[in-house]
Length: 152
Image 1 (cartoon, one colour):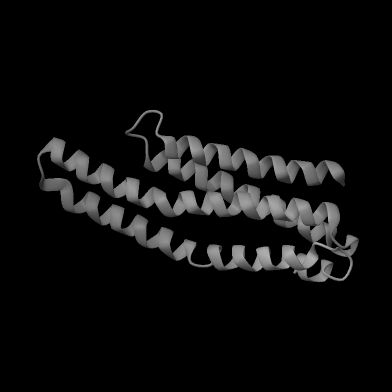
Image 2: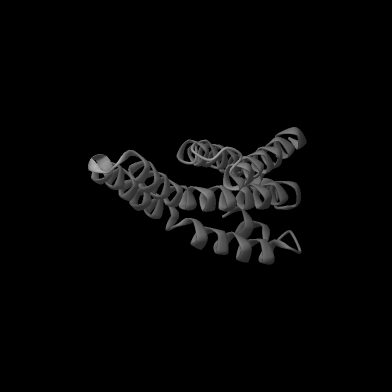
C-alpha cells in the first residue's frame, strides 16, 4: 500500500509498487510451504524411530534440512521487504512513512524468526552455509528497520 500511495509523489513509486507486488507474491505461499515441510520432518522423525542409529540420524537430518529451505526463503523475502520498506519510508509519500516503518520492523522480525528456526533445524552441521546466510539476511533486515527508525 505504501508504494502504491507513493506513486503520485515519488518518481520511483511505480517501480517500488511493482517490486512490492512481486514480494507479496513471493511471500504468500511460504507459510504453507513451511508448515508442510515441518510436518514432513516431524513425520520422518517418527517413522525413523525403528531404524539403526546412524541411518535414523541421517534420515532425520535430511528431513529437517529440507524443512529449513522454506524458512530460508522467508528470511530472503523478509530482508527484501525490509529493504524496500526502508526505501519507501525514506523517499515515499510522507503520509505513509509510519506504515513503511512498521513494514520494515515486521519484516525484520520475520527474518530474525526464520533465522532462528533455520539454525535450530540445521544444528547437526557446524557452520552450515544456510545458517550463515539466514543470520546475514536477518541482520540486513534489522539494519534496514533500524535505518528507518533513526530517520524518524
